[in-house]
Length: 290
Ligand SMILES: [Zn+2]
Image (cartoon, rainbow, N blue to C red; front, side):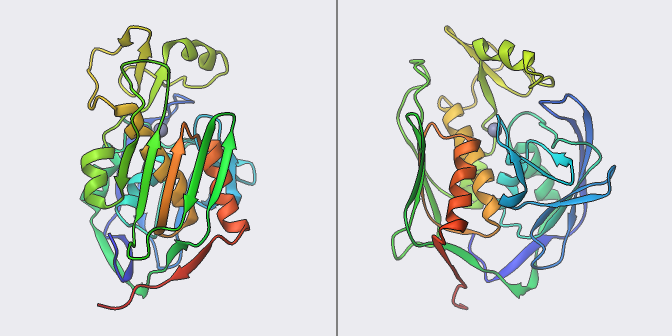
């Protein structure tokens, strides 16, 4: 994961899908970008660029949504999670609609696109965001926390737990250390999930209009409603890690630190990344040349 130089992709790749909340069809292209540009969303239909930056987050209700000048892009987190895990520092995400396609509800499709696009190194050196103090954000019994990693570690390490009060999901924490390989193997294919009792409520709120059994796991009191079985017995927990990686990637650089959460949310992750910047809880470091 740790490289000396910044990366982009070697060529443009594209996919057509629908948004989970709007159900609108959307064409998405990922394009190479220059060094120090970061990840920039470009709404082609409105000709507006929206850098993926915490100051551009406009809402965090069920997904992380960015916007600028009344133009928005919803559900950034699964794509961002894949880009971050692949170490892509700079890219343009071009969309002709207002939501990133949901595909199968996981990051698998985005990983396939990035495999096809192949990463390339740029001439400029990469900076790493090293967490230097602990920050915790809480909401009722939920929390997210970031703290400095052990002195010899240059990774983002994560520990996540949830308790849905549904016996078959369990409450054991999931321990994860981010690398491209560990992400592909353990996290990327974990799908979006929801509880049957919440779904009608969300549809009434005009959310998840594009949600169906092909892009989300649905649980009721008896277990999984979908005909496709779980990909992992703790698939929802792994998906929470997928979401958290995508949300943390808004810091714009690879992160050296320890993330811990119980039942976190896009809202709490956004509060955390905002606080990391505003409380100066980091230093920028460059890796020694090998
Ligand atoms: Zn998600």
